[in-house]
Image 1 (cartoon, rainbow, N blue to C red):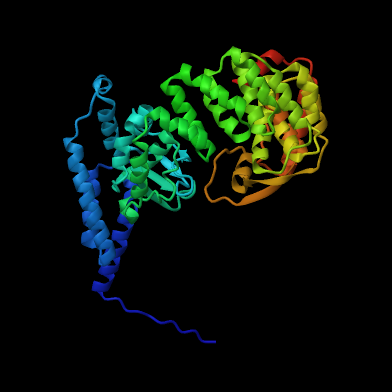
Image 2: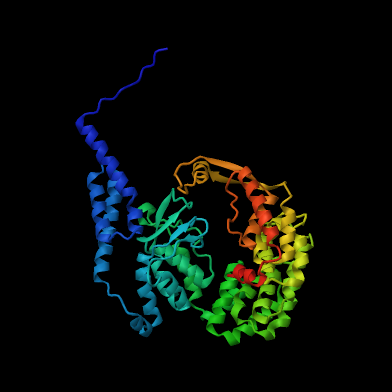
Length: 493
């Protein structure tokens, strides 16, 4: 069968045009990374102007020209800006300081993941700035709200980057307006950022719900801060909003509002009680022990865990640890996602408490019929170095049943390791292995006893089995020689 292919003859003019367009798009699509990496705005403006000059596409030409004008204007503002010392800032009125930090939002360079669905809540990478404007504005609290409301209308780009995934395959710059919304939400607890795309002007004009913010502020500004937060505490629909309100009230007047919050704890249950307990935190006194103990019977497992932690850390009362252990061992946990989170946090809490009176009960968790509890107990066991737990984990090394998930490893790296070379080569094939209970027990045992060779799940099964044999022999030979006090200190560190 004869195949025929259509051919297109490119003239030098056509080729030049295509190269210019490709170059223009490449430079334009990397502008957000250049801004995030700190390229001066004057240079960003120059690159935008170069893209506009190269681009044949009218849309790209217009977008680049517009963004170039924005960066040129921002560069002029940067040149005229006067930075203040910490002493000068401390003497400034709160509102003036808020406007100062709002201007500097443009220099925020944090990277946010999935910010469009969880606005401003999931970020990776700390700010490179000596003083982070978002943090400083949050410290100012209610006094910063007028300046932040005004800033929500500013669609110009900051250096803060958002990506849909950690791999950064889709990314954009957050606008001044979007960062202002996120800070407003943290100060007020109001879900003002919902509906914001997070995109800056360089992508879609910085869509921010400015009208909704202005409508909210028109009503909220009529209230004193304490009146607003008391209203939020009583009627806010979300746990985050109630917790924010409680924290703000404590910041305004801890002695006055701590009593009010404890009354709220006594009169409520479930999520309402939980949000207030979390806010009380460092304000809990030993005299509050009775009130905390009353929370241990709450049906919400998160309330139980929060109260138990406060009892242990603030009142030196370990009855909450025992209550958490009883809830874990009861077998009455439901199937909600919140329960999975509770199980992991609860087993870690019990293990790090290191109560010798609970070691036998903890060993029972290692045999629990609820896989979630058993798996979490194995993972947390290194925090609780104890001879009885070592013996229980040694028994688990005989369990060949699968846990229910797999781990992948880089085949090329494994071959290099086997040859004594620790070089990681990019693009290596991945191979998946089943994980068995003996593997989890071996990793926990190696961590607990500080086994020099460690234990890696990301290697082939045959290698793991050989390492388990060596680990078992090593632990048995030293079973009575471990310094448990030293191991416990090391586990908590």
